[in-house]
Length: 84
Image (cartoon, rainbow, N blue to C red; front, side):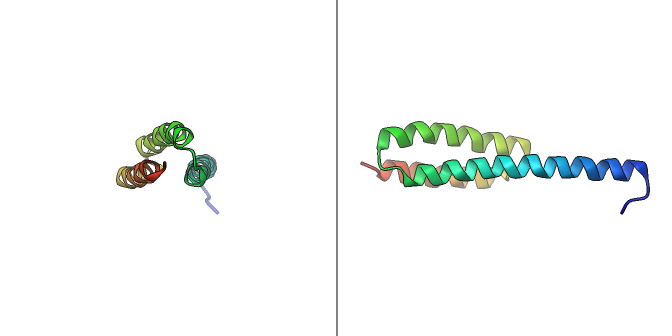
């Protein structure tokens, strides 16, 4: 356990940020799973735009790496394009 007040505060801040980041990542993962399970192309395209925005937002905030966001968007685009 930290002894200094500033270290204690830093620990509290880190815990808050970890919870926030975890929930945001979890929300996006759930949307991705939903998108992959869809069979209707129109619904999938609509959800794809939402997911792409979320991935960009996570990358901009540094929660996930920019390249990881780009790779996921690319794979999801291919998946949606393959739908009928």
